[in-house]
Length: 377
Image 1 (cartoon, rainbow, N blue to C red):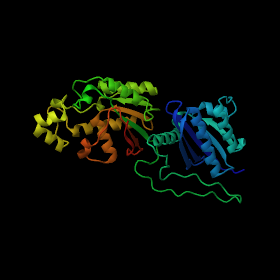
Image 2: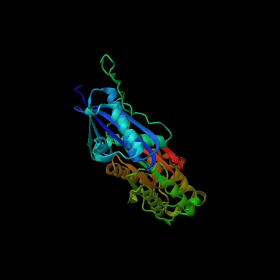
Image 3: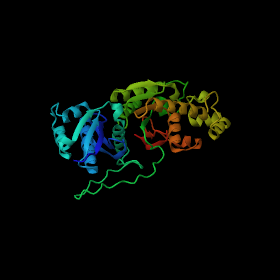
Image 4: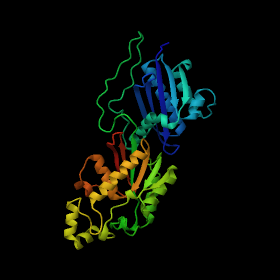
């Protein structure tokens, strides 16, 4: 038997349990910690436990492809899978019996050991599983990030070396470290939303309309928000109502943060765009032309951008590597999307986000974002 030691870290998840599911697994050199292979896949509708077993099978298969004679330590944060595969607990569920048998057939039992670890120590595999589910929600297959190892080919019959992968340079936002998924949800409709009237930070603070309540329920049932670790919201009622609907559906806490409030539209609050242009033609033209020009008695876009930048930094620092639903308003969410795209303030009014729509961003450890989906309804 080869003296080589490998470590498999595997995880799986389901956004709904059962719901849209996926798994991730990484194979590392046990001595150096070098990443040798990463695998992930969305598997359709399944339970958490089935997804975790699928991740285990995929990780063992990747390890066997690197060196079928290696000693393999499997690390998972699923107590159930670890105890069942170690033989201390019975496998009773029919689907898991099949998957457990598949896992046992990949490598001889004498080569494989199992160890439970806290979730925080399984973040690499957890990230891969969430990437696979995010990709499926965006309508595309998961792709391994450039610069990470591909599964190496197994040794041939003559015992030749496994094929090595040639890493490429990692694109922006895909360096080593945990990635944070941010699901942007615009609040659902109010009476003012339906009339296309400005509704700012210090205005009437309307509640959701009947249509808005239906939209919030639909957002709460959407695959994009499922599996969230926390729901962050502005202080305004239309946002907190939407956030509570989402949080109740996914079983997450709600955190209220005034930094995510809508722009203060000052004297324009409650008016339509046409009414503003009619009454304040020069002021509106100046406001539209420069991000530094505030609404009369209100905020400029530049002020909103500064508080959104501070709020984003706080959020990414507090929930690094987690899935966060952010329920906010048109201007703050457009600022976030523009920043992710590297677009200037001249595009702020050209981005449309529907009530209760979902936009997915993923931030790398360097703070650079990828845009995964926009305005899903």
